[in-house]
Image 1 (cartoon, protein in one colour):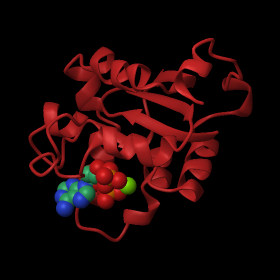
Image 2: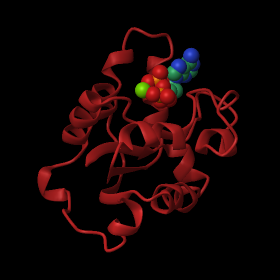
Image 3: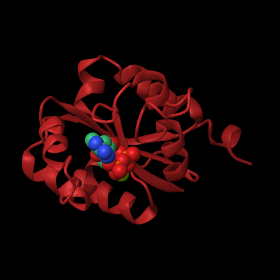
Image 4: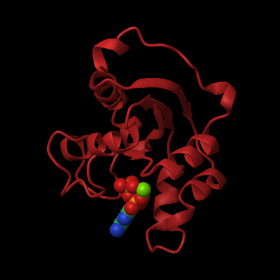
Length: 149
Ligand code: DAT
Ligand code: MG
């Protein structure tokens, strides 16, 4: 089983889309193992987006992430990292497929609603950056045998 880091960004929280977004991961078949609402500080936002620190959009991105609360989550399941990226859709909502979160709910790249880890290495680094081990819950979903052979 893989785990991935998912964050509903300030626009998703402000637009009251958190239920819609969480519902998509739940109904797909993934299991939430951690969740917290938080007001992010600049230090954490800059660490999280460190890979983009030389890009022209970096300051605007950090300003946006600290502008209102976010919902930070960890989701578990087989191939959840790649699958969550599909559920989320392409970075620019203009080209994100209909049916994806960004394709259905967003209109601009700077307000694309949600973050999801893009690979196993970034997933484990981001889970560790955002969550203490004690905040994650190991539990056995009863529906498991109805989701996997
Ligand atoms: P993703 O969030 O799909 O993994 P990314 O890691 O390339 O995309 O970029 C991180 C975030 O930075 C992205 O969700 C929105 C913002 N961003 C990326 N490219 C941008 C651009 N050209 N202009 C403005 N914001 C951008
Ligand atoms: Mg990314």
